[in-house]
Length: 170
Image (cartoon, rainbow, N blue to C red; front, top):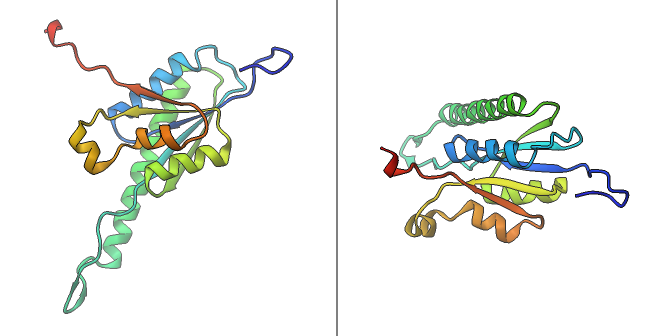
């Protein structure tokens, strides 16, 4: 990733983060292996996608079971979790790599679509994300965010799989 003169190119690296261990492992791996040369021109973009609410209002004879106050409380909770996760990730970046530019983005929507849209909108050079390692059945029902991004993002996508604990070391 160098320009015609050979100088390092400014890179935009999008890392999808959530509250999972796999996500934080992917970020740590990225910091150690992608940003290892500490190119101060690199920009690390931490993206948290708040999924659409899974609580749908249901009717009874008095109106909605889930009041607007309850839905507002759920939205605030989701925003608080997103802020906590992005701040934790930002702190990890500052501790592991000196002089890296870190931006955070919190978006609402299906994580599969959000990651693809943000990657395209910001013209990132690479997307880094963790793999939850779901089995075939769970992937069939829940879908795979990483698989969707690999097939739909126009830049390279790096999937970082968290190593399973070695059973023999016990």
